[in-house]
Image (cartoon, rainbow, N blue to C red):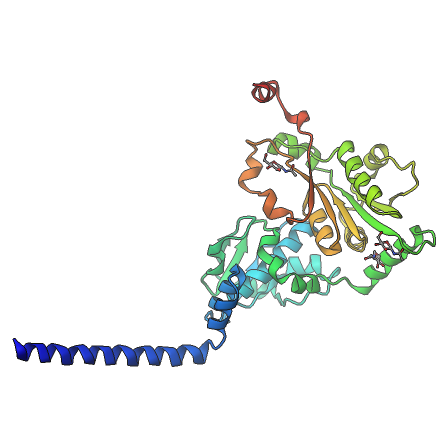
Length: 350
Ligand SMILES: *[C@@H]1O[C@H](CO)[C@@H](O)[C@H](O)[C@H]1NC(C)=O
Ligand SMILES: *[C@@H]1O[C@H](CO)[C@@H](O)[C@H](O)[C@H]1NC(C)=O
Ligand SMILES: *[C@@H]1O[C@H](CO)[C@@H](O)[C@H](O)[C@H]1NC(C)=O
């Protein structure tokens, strides 16, 4: 019995020694390759930091890209999401030619463009994204990934908003156009507060009630939003752009002399309208990604139409209000009565 005891004691020390040596080697190895990882983990606990640590282990070979879908607002959402997720996963992002065609005449974007002859010959792994950030998106594997979906949510990229805003720096001709226009409507007054008003209508006027059980912004919403700014600032000028200027002229009261209808209504060439909105100090948006991006770039106070769908709308399966609109933005709930049926009304009254 005694012999066995000594034997097991020796064995015990050997194991302890081995473990200590292993731990030491791991520690040396780890601190060599990730000198700041431990520090980062201790000082911050945000999602992007945790993602950031892991990303340094990812390989930078391969190509990541995103499907180029929709018009300007969607293209911007896709660009920013690709930029942020590639960064989190330690991959090099490239945009497709069709996205470059959309964005590069307007912004000084920096992501390289993948030549079509190359992108056509890559066997892409398609990865679908919801319109909000998820933990799984920190660990997307694959060297040839094409992201898909219609992502346009600050939850993907707000932690690197400075870089995103830098990517969406306007070309000089658009800055000059916007400044010239704003000066021309200031009537020589020095301290004007410019409020952008973007009224999205077009196809949404029918799609919202028919497909999504929802509404678009109405006259009352715009009045409430404008009165907020009239009360808060002394020298307010509203700059209205829309693809339906006639509707705006009929429904926005311009009798106070502080409203300028300025969009040329050409949704096919939206650069000037967009730049004008983004150069204002504050934003009144209605719905849609064009307005969301104008507000994000303008960076001031933003009023948006909220709760514009019925509770059982299929829209809510692909869209989250809290992921689309920044927490500090001010929501005004929509009047849903145009899409409420008698049955809905009865349920509410019960
Ligand atoms: C200009 O307007 C802003 C916002 O209304 C106000 O905060 C600021 O004090 C004004 N400055 C001058 C010089 O009047
Ligand atoms: C408001 O916007 C104008 C035009 O872009 C700008 O010149 C001015 O500095 C802005 N005012 C404030 C208070 O940010
Ligand atoms: C929208 O509806 C939700 C749920 O009823 C509510 O919690 C939220 O405050 C509403 N938002 C606004 C801006 O009215």
